[in-house]
Amino acid sequence: MSSAYRYCPACAQPLSARAEDGRAACACGFIHWDNPVPVVAAIVEHEGAVILARNKDWPEKMFGLVTGFLEKDEAPEEGVKREVKEELDLDATAAHFVGLYPFARRNELIIAYHVPATGTVHLNEELADVRRVAPERLRPWDFGTGLAVADWLKRRQA
Ligand SMILES: [Zn+2]
Image (cartoon, rainbow, N blue to C red):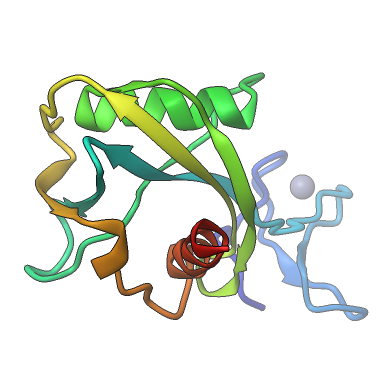
């Protein structure tokens, strides 16, 4: 049984693995479905460059897209614009859908957008650094949000 829960969040009894699929379940009827969590990701284009960001918790050379969780009742295109504002202090002028990318390792579903943005970059407290990369020099990584970057670059050249 792999679950973030050991005890039922509804009634506090210990959970056990269901015979049919091993999901964590409780006698009261609670089942931890462990569904993937949607995450919005932004390929931020600012003054001709793509902005990659490094989270404070990430290794020194690791840069990625701006990502974040949706808020309750928030549309994904609004969520991705909000994340760009919160993390970089840039104003999104659009959010063009790029694609959906299941990211099994983190149990997430990435909803990726190309987000042209204006303003001056100011990092929020979650970010350590940003890197500006000309689109033609961008080298997509082969997992998670990198797959969105690869698709965006392909479409851009077409
Ligand atoms: Zn229970």
